[in-house]
Image (cartoon, rainbow, N blue to C red):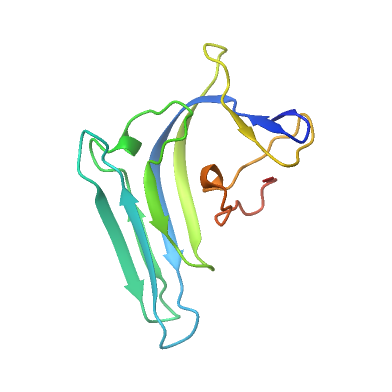
Length: 147
């Protein structure tokens, strides 16, 4: 939610855990190929794990559906922080669906904030999946967003 007009949005969730990530990636044209991949980061508890798929058919897109592996960073509840839980590769035209489990804040901690260039006070915004690195390639569809 925008808490300082045109400069700051604040989260109203205290913790997050990734439930599943799904990616559909169609080739641009028949005979070309498309690849999507997802790498779960293990941190100090586990090795990284990559899941990927490639398709050469416009009728059947490349598709992956993956839950966080046991002991990966995304398998645990995380407080808001600039922490990468996974890395995905999905070219333009891909559909990415991220299922999250969220715990709303009950004023135990100070809400995490993110700087934005524009925002209307009191409006709820959904930020891009890659907003932390500033690229904003994976923006939400049919939801109010800002950069």
